[in-house]
Image (cartoon, rainbow over all chains, first blue to last red):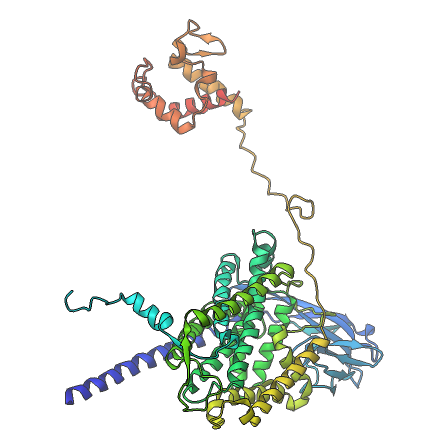
Length: 154
Length: 477
């Protein structure tokens, strides 16, 4: 009986270490492969001339850049609206709805940005007016260089 | 030999008897109790069509869409193959739901089948996982945006959501790593999870048997009847019907495909596959910070309640009339999810058709011109061909080949016969290697010939190669 309980303990110990080892390895691999390294060069993309921006008329623009994602050279295109904020300074909104990421569109009649998926509505200042979005439209880092509005390629 | 009884059966026969021929089922098992087998059969079909699709598919963003298009349009039966897999997925969802509903409404999850139910619920989750990961693989608009929304839903779950979504996405947004991951999950991780779970599910069904219709928990089975062939026929009939529906849908409707995936969704209204439409609609109901109610809390709560059902519902009755609460809850849940699904379907979104496909040959696609081939290097003293012809002629004259052969009617015109052909014909039908070997040892090829070998003629390697080149040039006119 003594021998049997010793062997039972050995089975538990060996089985436990094998299971723990495999689980640990799985964790290491999951971590190692969880993100491909992404490399982007810091750069700016011109979107429009400052003079083109009119109060309450956001301009739909897109910009592209190339980044290295693991081995894959990916061309990334981003959709944005360029407009002026309350003080008249240029501001760049991402067109990704902050709810679940669908693409918002400016509706001039109601002067709102509308999401086609779950009914999110944002006002002209990018704040939530209606529907499920948890926060206003994301503002992308931008600058004015000469007479051009530029956005960070990221 | 003598230790075994004369009626001993082979091991295979024993297994078949235990699982099929000697098996009993409770009396009164109808077609509703055949849904699980139909689901199994359709899943096997999904496995087979999936394996064949994998033969032609490439999980990389720059090739996936074209690979899918090529399967549809270039492979014999490819459209049907992908159609079967696409509509098969819908059939899996329908059958899994009906099977689950049958078990729920007949109270079959009750003691002693709690574990069987739990494994079944886990299997349902795995099947939803198959649906979700299979989604992205065609890399069209629907694939991209539905996956984007789906991963953002995962991301909204408190605490674990964000790391889990990052793990599934493999980067800041959907890209090459996401596609590689979804493919790996769809064809490796999920099947590796499905197989043992399904095996366990079947084993438990076999050990515990089908629930006697209407029997209270603990009540002994009153009547039983043979499993084979009466119930097997019902199972196969339902399976055949399900497969037939899938084939007809695949044949008539084919697999859908939209425009290639793009981040630019101007005018595009993404909608998920129909079995996710209820969840999709649910998301519209919760605003602002309450959005996690729709994305995580409510679905999570329902999933937890469903999984723990056998431990929550202690009522020993199985007859519907004696379990009004459970029946009402089930009907309410189905009605709720059903009306959400219908509401979601009323707003169908948009469909961006694939762009016209470019083909080589019909003028729609003109391949870029091949890079110019380097011109042969011309020696400064003129045309290389003329030079070769002149050098070769000098050589054959110096080795006195014209003693037997002829060149342009000059040489031994008395006719050495077929043995010494004119040089214009000597190289016909032979490549350079053969000609070289012939010159090295003609007797090996024509034992009776008088032609001297290269060694006998003291012909160097350079000369021999030049003569071969010259022979081929002369033969080609």
